[in-house]
Amino acid sequence: MKDHGLNAPSNFIRSMISKDISSGKHSGRVLTRFPPEPNGYLHIGHAKSVCLNFSLASENNGACNLRFDDTNPEKESQEYVDAIKENIKWLGFKWNGDVRYSSNYFDHLYNLAMQLIQNGKAFVCSLSAEQSREFRGTLTEPGKNSPDRNRSIRENLNLFKQMKGGEFSDGAYTLRAKIDMESPNINMRDPIIYRIRHVSHHQTGDKWCIYPTYDFTHCISDAIENVTHSLCTLEFEDHRPLYDWILNNLELDSLRVICDLSDSDMTFVLPQQTEFAKLKLNYTIMGKRKLKEMVEAGLVDGWDDPRLPTLAGMRRRGFTAASIRNFCEIAGVSRSEGTVDLSMLEHCVREDLDQCASRVMCVLNPMKVTIRNIKKGEVENLSLQNHPKNESMGTRIVPFTREIYIDKSDFEENPAPGFKRLVLGGEVRLRGSYVIKCEEILRNGEGEIIELICSADRETLGRRPEGRKVKGVIHWVSAVHGQEATLMLYDRLFMVENPEAKEIADYKEFLNPESLSVIKNCMIEPSALEGRERKHYQFEREGYFILDIEGENMEYPVFNRTITLRDSWGK
Ligand code: ATP
Ligand code: MG
Image 1 (tube, rainbow, N blue to C red):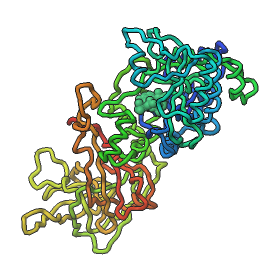
Image 2 (cartoon, rainbow, N blue to C red):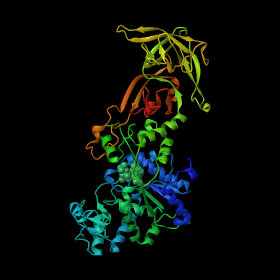
Image 3 (cartoon, rainbow, N blue to C red):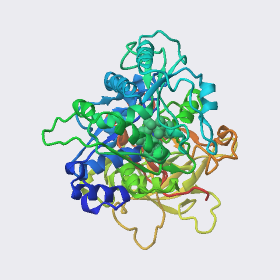
Image 4 (tube, rainbow, N blue to C red):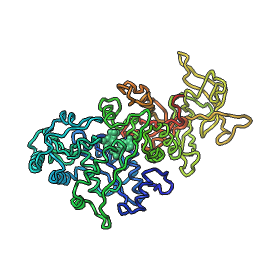
């Protein structure tokens, strides 16, 4: 993995970390964490957070933990845990030590909650969800104290134990931090830190029927792991006072004792939360809730549908991990929300594929061509470069035969001025092969062209034709050796720039009906199917393609178009 080091663009978090290192804060250490909730697959927005956390750590000889933030068991599952781990590995990052789970700390969290109660800093509340909303106040009105706020410590301890013991039904009680119902920051108005949920958890099974909230769990998990820099997105800015309140109101020694100080010269320092703006992309829906909705409604073909902004989808479509990392780097890190143009991501993908994709030929809309002066059964194995600018990518054998396919659109009976490809009586260069001349058109009963009869100038292999110029070069595939393939061409999933705009009541009405075109009976040169590997190809003149993820198992190979050669949107 490339270390960004000195060449990395500066941003406010990089600068802050450099400063912290030189001032010796956190004893000069950098430990970050990526904390996904396993309630869906990762999307490109998460990739930004992954790249940021992992690269800041590696640039500074630090480490980055992977911690599943798993406090909402109803919405979470092992499937998502597995997919997220896979996504991160694919992006090219390695987490520090074992995978961690907030649920690993449930015992500690429970004891620390007991400690808050003991110190008069938390109480068990019997207000219903609806009552709590009423008591909470609004942005302009202060909240009101719960009638249970002054319950005795003893009673609180007992009730909380009984909550844990499963003696109450969901929602009967909550545990709340005792902070300030008049705080202008609503998050500080005696926030709930534990709730009763009689549900099994994907990691802890039926051990617990009370679960801590995100706000209580996150800061403590960071402290337990001795995280130095806890990076999150801007919507948590208003939660930072609560993050700090919880850590500052626990007894430091009790945190220190459970903290993972595996490295002996680590000193225990409280973690610090810093927020940055979420990545947003136009023509894209990012929130996991809506992605899940689309998957469950069958509007797309699963979480890895190549039209989705999920990492699984992008991988299946053929986006490279390097291009996504590069995109996240140049999209930058700031504190102001802005939407990034999808074409910037596409640019990064093209740039990477242009370098790494082998060239092959595939005819999307085949028309037969018979070359008169090539003998029946003759096979000439031509050797073509896999990459026009990179010899180290080697060559491949492309069989040339009497019968070949070219694309229908590369022949015109009534050509417009400037048409440079094949016309009756005209010549064109077959890529990597001979110049051919069209001498005759064969038609079926309806008068449609079904075949062209041509002749090849056999002096033109790797040589210019004598005494004339042939401008057009077209791709072709041997009709004998070519193999049938299906191509999936993708376009933007949404027809509007911002499918999540306020004016849009239902984003589903703005799905692009042409986001997927399936092209059957394409003809592809045999080398592209050797070993049925998932390799990146440029199908000459048609775009970048990759064998679909199911590739090895399919009778007819299916290729996904990763991206067109040029940006043709709106043209
Ligand atoms: P979503 O809103 O898409 O459902 P989330 O924030 O609920 O995402 P989490 O699993 O909680 O998803 O996120 C894990 C980490 O990724 C968090 O630190 C979160 O701040 C970060 N993250 C989520 N979405 C983005 C984004 N669009 N850009 C940058 N970071 C993001
Ligand atoms: Mg979330």
